[in-house]
Length: 219
Image (cartoon, rainbow, N blue to C red; front, side):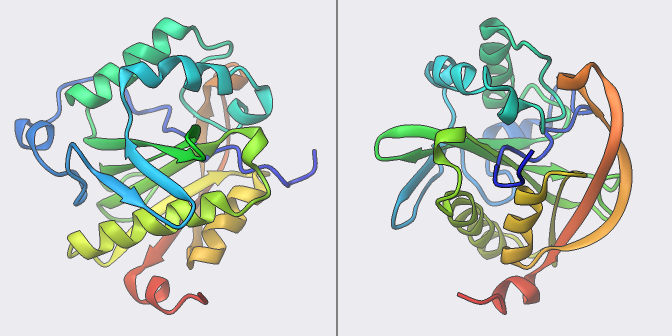
Protein backbone atom coordinates (compact mmCIF):
# COMPACT_ATOMS: atom_id res chain seq x y z
CA UNK A 1 0.00 0.00 0.00
CA UNK A 2 1.22 3.49 -0.74
CA UNK A 3 2.12 5.29 2.52
CA UNK A 4 -0.05 8.31 1.74
CA UNK A 5 -2.70 7.54 4.34
CA UNK A 6 -2.91 9.15 7.74
CA UNK A 7 -5.21 6.50 9.07
CA UNK A 8 -4.32 6.42 12.73
CA UNK A 9 -2.02 5.84 15.54
CA UNK A 10 -2.87 2.83 17.60
CA UNK A 11 -5.63 3.34 20.10
CA UNK A 12 -3.95 1.29 22.78
CA UNK A 13 -5.36 -2.23 22.76
CA UNK A 14 -4.25 -2.61 26.38
CA UNK A 15 -6.48 0.34 27.35
CA UNK A 16 -9.59 -1.26 28.85
CA UNK A 17 -12.62 0.20 30.67
CA UNK A 18 -12.29 0.83 34.36
CA UNK A 19 -12.93 3.73 36.72
CA UNK A 20 -10.57 6.68 36.47
CA UNK A 21 -9.87 8.84 39.53
CA UNK A 22 -12.73 11.18 40.39
CA UNK A 23 -10.47 14.18 39.82
CA UNK A 24 -9.82 13.06 36.24
CA UNK A 25 -13.53 12.57 35.55
CA UNK A 26 -14.43 16.00 36.89
CA UNK A 27 -11.60 18.21 35.69
CA UNK A 28 -8.89 18.73 33.13
CA UNK A 29 -6.95 15.84 31.62
CA UNK A 30 -3.49 16.83 30.35
CA UNK A 31 -4.72 20.42 30.44
CA UNK A 32 -7.89 19.76 28.41
CA UNK A 33 -11.18 20.60 30.12
CA UNK A 34 -14.40 18.56 29.59
CA UNK A 35 -15.75 21.32 27.32
CA UNK A 36 -12.45 21.85 25.50
CA UNK A 37 -12.57 23.50 22.05
CA UNK A 38 -9.48 24.15 19.90
CA UNK A 39 -9.63 26.07 16.63
CA UNK A 40 -7.12 26.39 13.80
CA UNK A 41 -7.36 28.15 10.44
CA UNK A 42 -9.15 25.16 8.91
CA UNK A 43 -10.27 22.94 11.77
CA UNK A 44 -12.31 22.76 14.91
CA UNK A 45 -11.48 20.26 17.63
CA UNK A 46 -14.14 19.55 20.26
CA UNK A 47 -14.89 16.83 22.77
CA UNK A 48 -16.50 13.76 21.21
CA UNK A 49 -20.19 13.13 21.94
CA UNK A 50 -22.33 10.00 21.68
CA UNK A 51 -24.21 11.73 18.86
CA UNK A 52 -20.98 11.48 16.82
CA UNK A 53 -20.99 7.68 16.95
CA UNK A 54 -22.74 7.07 13.61
CA UNK A 55 -20.27 9.25 11.68
CA UNK A 56 -17.26 7.70 13.42
CA UNK A 57 -18.65 4.23 12.81
CA UNK A 58 -19.04 5.02 9.10
CA UNK A 59 -15.41 6.12 8.84
CA UNK A 60 -14.27 3.00 10.70
CA UNK A 61 -16.06 0.88 8.09
CA UNK A 62 -13.05 1.68 5.87
CA UNK A 63 -10.41 -1.02 6.38
CA UNK A 64 -7.62 1.31 5.27
CA UNK A 65 -8.42 3.53 8.25
CA UNK A 66 -9.04 0.95 10.94
CA UNK A 67 -6.18 -1.42 10.03
CA UNK A 68 -3.70 0.92 11.72
CA UNK A 69 -5.60 1.10 15.02
CA UNK A 70 -4.91 -1.09 18.02
CA UNK A 71 -8.13 -1.32 19.98
CA UNK A 72 -11.31 -1.69 17.89
CA UNK A 73 -12.36 -5.06 16.54
CA UNK A 74 -13.12 -5.54 12.85
CA UNK A 75 -15.84 -5.12 11.86
CA UNK A 76 -16.75 -2.64 14.60
CA UNK A 77 -20.40 -2.74 15.71
CA UNK A 78 -22.12 0.64 16.11
CA UNK A 79 -23.08 -0.29 19.68
CA UNK A 80 -19.40 -0.68 20.60
CA UNK A 81 -18.59 2.70 19.08
CA UNK A 82 -21.27 4.30 21.25
CA UNK A 83 -20.13 2.40 24.34
CA UNK A 84 -16.51 3.53 23.87
CA UNK A 85 -17.54 7.19 23.61
CA UNK A 86 -19.80 6.86 26.65
CA UNK A 87 -17.02 5.26 28.71
CA UNK A 88 -14.46 7.90 27.77
CA UNK A 89 -16.75 10.90 28.32
CA UNK A 90 -17.94 9.47 31.66
CA UNK A 91 -14.37 8.79 32.78
CA UNK A 92 -14.94 5.04 32.95
CA UNK A 93 -11.51 4.14 31.63
CA UNK A 94 -8.41 3.03 33.50
CA UNK A 95 -6.20 5.71 31.96
CA UNK A 96 -7.80 9.19 31.98
CA UNK A 97 -8.20 10.55 28.48
CA UNK A 98 -9.77 13.39 26.53
CA UNK A 99 -11.09 12.34 23.11
CA UNK A 100 -11.82 15.03 20.52
CA UNK A 101 -13.31 14.94 17.05
CA UNK A 102 -11.71 16.92 14.24
CA UNK A 103 -14.19 18.92 12.16
CA UNK A 104 -13.42 20.30 8.70
CA UNK A 105 -16.01 22.29 6.73
CA UNK A 106 -18.70 21.21 9.17
CA UNK A 107 -17.96 17.47 8.88
CA UNK A 108 -16.21 15.09 11.24
CA UNK A 109 -12.94 14.29 9.51
CA UNK A 110 -11.20 12.33 12.24
CA UNK A 111 -10.42 11.98 15.90
CA UNK A 112 -7.55 12.84 18.20
CA UNK A 113 -7.05 12.23 21.87
CA UNK A 114 -4.62 12.48 24.74
CA UNK A 115 -4.18 10.16 27.70
CA UNK A 116 -2.47 10.80 31.03
CA UNK A 117 -0.42 7.69 30.46
CA UNK A 118 1.83 5.91 32.99
CA UNK A 119 5.29 4.69 32.12
CA UNK A 120 5.06 1.35 30.31
CA UNK A 121 6.23 -0.43 27.16
CA UNK A 122 4.83 2.41 25.00
CA UNK A 123 6.68 5.28 26.69
CA UNK A 124 9.74 5.60 28.89
CA UNK A 125 8.13 7.92 31.46
CA UNK A 126 4.70 8.95 32.63
CA UNK A 127 3.17 11.79 30.62
CA UNK A 128 0.66 12.75 27.92
CA UNK A 129 0.25 10.25 25.09
CA UNK A 130 -1.55 11.30 21.91
CA UNK A 131 -3.30 9.14 19.33
CA UNK A 132 -5.32 9.99 16.22
CA UNK A 133 -7.04 8.82 13.05
CA UNK A 134 -8.34 10.50 9.90
CA UNK A 135 -10.99 9.54 7.36
CA UNK A 136 -9.65 8.59 3.95
CA UNK A 137 -11.34 11.45 2.06
CA UNK A 138 -9.31 13.91 4.17
CA UNK A 139 -5.86 12.42 3.59
CA UNK A 140 -3.12 14.33 1.83
CA UNK A 141 -4.21 17.83 2.94
CA UNK A 142 -2.02 18.35 5.99
CA UNK A 143 -5.03 18.28 8.30
CA UNK A 144 -3.63 15.86 10.83
CA UNK A 145 -0.39 17.77 11.22
CA UNK A 146 -2.48 20.90 11.81
CA UNK A 147 -4.79 19.20 14.31
CA UNK A 148 -2.05 17.42 16.23
CA UNK A 149 0.10 20.55 16.35
CA UNK A 150 -2.77 22.53 17.86
CA UNK A 151 -3.51 19.86 20.44
CA UNK A 152 0.13 19.52 21.42
CA UNK A 153 0.49 23.29 21.79
CA UNK A 154 -2.51 23.35 24.15
CA UNK A 155 -1.18 20.46 26.23
CA UNK A 156 2.31 21.94 26.56
CA UNK A 157 0.82 25.34 27.49
CA UNK A 158 -1.30 23.80 30.24
CA UNK A 159 1.08 21.16 31.62
CA UNK A 160 4.55 21.45 33.09
CA UNK A 161 5.84 18.11 31.81
CA UNK A 162 8.90 17.99 29.55
CA UNK A 163 7.58 15.58 26.90
CA UNK A 164 4.60 14.15 25.02
CA UNK A 165 4.57 10.58 23.70
CA UNK A 166 3.01 8.89 20.70
CA UNK A 167 3.83 6.21 18.13
CA UNK A 168 2.50 4.10 15.29
CA UNK A 169 2.54 0.56 14.03
CA UNK A 170 5.52 -0.24 11.85
CA UNK A 171 4.55 0.45 8.22
CA UNK A 172 2.28 3.40 9.00
CA UNK A 173 4.66 5.78 7.27
CA UNK A 174 2.26 8.71 6.96
CA UNK A 175 1.44 8.79 10.68
CA UNK A 176 5.13 8.67 11.52
CA UNK A 177 5.73 11.49 9.05
CA UNK A 178 3.11 13.63 10.82
CA UNK A 179 4.98 13.09 14.06
CA UNK A 180 8.36 13.84 12.51
CA UNK A 181 7.07 17.17 11.17
CA UNK A 182 5.99 18.08 14.70
CA UNK A 183 9.37 17.19 16.18
CA UNK A 184 8.81 13.66 17.51
CA UNK A 185 11.76 11.28 17.39
CA UNK A 186 11.74 7.50 17.51
CA UNK A 187 12.23 6.03 20.95
CA UNK A 188 12.29 2.27 20.56
CA UNK A 189 10.10 -0.52 19.25
CA UNK A 190 7.71 -2.72 21.20
CA UNK A 191 5.06 -5.30 20.35
CA UNK A 192 1.44 -4.18 20.55
CA UNK A 193 -1.83 -6.02 20.00
CA UNK A 194 -3.72 -5.05 16.83
CA UNK A 195 -7.35 -6.07 17.33
CA UNK A 196 -8.54 -5.18 13.79
CA UNK A 197 -6.07 -7.75 12.43
CA UNK A 198 -7.37 -10.52 14.64
CA UNK A 199 -5.56 -9.65 17.86
CA UNK A 200 -2.05 -10.40 16.62
CA UNK A 201 0.96 -8.58 18.03
CA UNK A 202 2.78 -6.25 15.64
CA UNK A 203 5.87 -4.05 15.98
CA UNK A 204 4.97 -0.59 17.29
CA UNK A 205 7.37 2.34 16.95
CA UNK A 206 7.35 4.49 20.07
CA UNK A 207 8.01 8.22 19.69
CA UNK A 208 8.66 11.14 22.01
CA UNK A 209 8.45 14.92 21.60
CA UNK A 210 10.22 17.25 24.00
CA UNK A 211 8.94 20.72 24.64
CA UNK A 212 12.13 22.25 23.22
CA UNK A 213 11.93 20.27 19.98
CA UNK A 214 8.29 21.27 19.48
CA UNK A 215 9.09 24.93 20.02
CA UNK A 216 12.02 24.72 17.58
CA UNK A 217 10.09 22.97 14.78
CA UNK A 218 9.86 24.67 11.36
CA UNK A 219 6.63 26.67 11.00
